[in-house]
Picture (tube, one colour):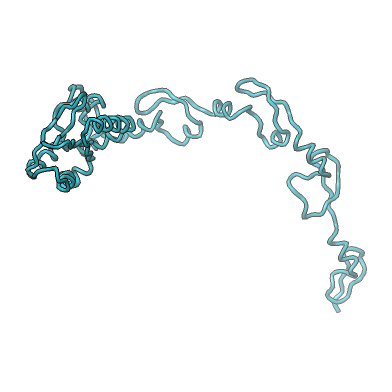
Length: 282
């Protein structure tokens, strides 16, 4: 016969039972542990499963402790500020604001590309050996630049080779682009296609203060060949809308074609749209 002793009262227990009675079993399940209150320091008893990282003897003690504040002095701006005591115990509440925290955890570095001094987070300074002051400098460090002269003012400029390979980047500024009197690559494609389709036209037509790329003869149709880069800028889009509105009030119809459209269709996008017009003679 197997015999045990009750862990509560010490009486002898027969068979495979652990406790001598229901009472002893109940007492074993209700045994409490003694803890020290995080707030006031008093000792109190609690069931084991209720134990937390921070333990309080009462609800009022919990509220008093978590709402308690301390006056601290910011090591950056020397300004006094109040912070929750519970945060101080956890190692927080050193700085009065995120702004002051960022100031102390930043490092002055020199841009690898342009040599300009700038500050950034200390963690980034440790992580990356090469430092760049902007995304442009970071991108420029991996690009191959080529020196060319502006097609309008002849000023020497440096642009990425990839831009030249895409057939762009012939001008130093928007001003030079819009004041250029010569023929662009997409205007050349449209001119050749119009001639091949035997559609009579005039090139570089002046209407008031504006110049239109093409005007179909004996009609009020104007054709504009828009480069993707310059005409894609927000300021250029706004100017084009105003320009089109003024030309419409003068009785003209403006048809705009993008650089991508013209190059992809080899100018057929212009011919296809004009062929649907009854007022265009071919």
